[in-house]
Image (cartoon, rainbow, N blue to C red; front, side, top):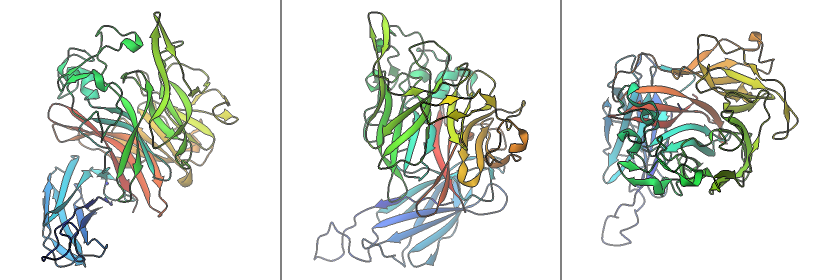
Length: 488
């Protein structure tokens, strides 16, 4: 596959009362913004969602005594109470069965001012976590967002795999419930339907945007790569970075890509090698190179500058040869190099990765000698947390808490205590603990069908957040989105 506090600040200018003054500027005491907080109430699932709307004036002071209207799509809103000056609270009961998972969209409105937040209601949420939420801002769209990671300081977010098309239905075809058409067929309506944006403000400089001919037709040829005929589906894909805003949302998107006209199998699994400094970041990622020997996806390191378009190289097709020039990322010389390396992470002196592909899904580790990217590596071994009857993948090492996060079967995000011992030995790991998870099998539109891609951020204000990816089955397609949950 590849929410306890939601901060969504929506400013809105209201006309000032009376005939004097500038009517475009609100006066003190007039509602000017709403800040929504979501909290998860304890009890049996589906957990009720406590929603608090904090209404402030243009000078940032709370505005009491208002009539705030709450509505909930996917839930039922109770009675509103003003719990403190300018803070209005309601409990929303999700209309889900006990084992189901889905979204509840909450809206608060006062006069002409409104705000919206989306609770991600999961049947299994660890006691340490609050209410999971859909990341606000320009991150999530009706297109596919997948393979996301937040920077350690919470200031930057990379969505490694974005497409305006439904990648799950396109690649899997009619074998996936709710999808139609042949798998990866350029003739399939699913592989030609555009759901999400492919231009500014949400997705500026989208590679392959010129191949979207209409809302129902994509050109699946890429002459730049020597693909002159529509032999298989190639919907546009690229990575995007985002900057955290003062209200906690993420915006200011910028593309991260290899110049190859939005080729579907683009770099993925970006991970930060430490917190960026002034936007400068060192990252690892996975990519199946189009040049050289075909060994499947390999791991690469690159130094990039966040906040502006990032070029990781360029491909061109000249004289019947595919040429990579320039190609600044450096391949990690893992031993052995095949068959499949994806979703890298770094922690406790090891490079961790998985095999999220057409092979057994396990977590692997290799120890570098020297600094990346010029290090040599020990022979790759299977991390002992991997079990023969379970698919483990998408590792993330939280050194500060001595934990290894990982996904299992796309059904949960788990952790295991790990403080740096030999990862090939079972004694180095604690028993897995589920942090977020699904329970009942999904059975129709509106259901969350998968979770994964864990990463952790600790902000300057002392907050700890777990970010993840989840998929919702919509009517006729699947929607990959980025979520997060704050530690209590």
